[in-house]
Length: 183
Image (cartoon, rainbow, N blue to C red; front, side, top):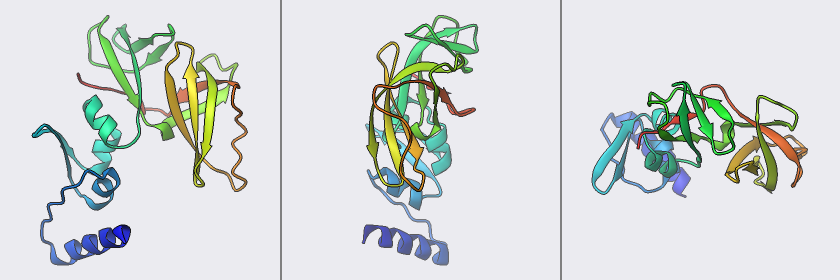
């Protein structure tokens, strides 16, 4: 019923051209029903933008965590265009921060790529578990430094991912998917 109401409200708004202000704590409703989203915390607006902007380019950890599922990695800026993680591995990501500053990086689970363990350009990880969701499978991964991240893989017609718990793998991220967040 809720999904049907979302469709009906969106249709009515399109027909009438009236501005609707829709207040919700439901992230899915906010993303699917809105042309513009304002994320608030403690009565302050943290970010305003299209659903796509809010989801793909959150300005801080609160927004990234509130809208959708997010993996967070922390590290120190090196050479201005990289972040050294706790494992010692360096991710190439522009942060706009001075060298040595600790930063938080965000990457969405659907932007995580899992490859062979011998991929020297990926981050070394171990598969900690998998949960089948029908349309996709959530793979929990543990990086060398103990950080856990989640990948969401689209399922094949058989529903098999070929990834088994305990397996050694490498992790990469889709181009442009890793975002450095403000404090």
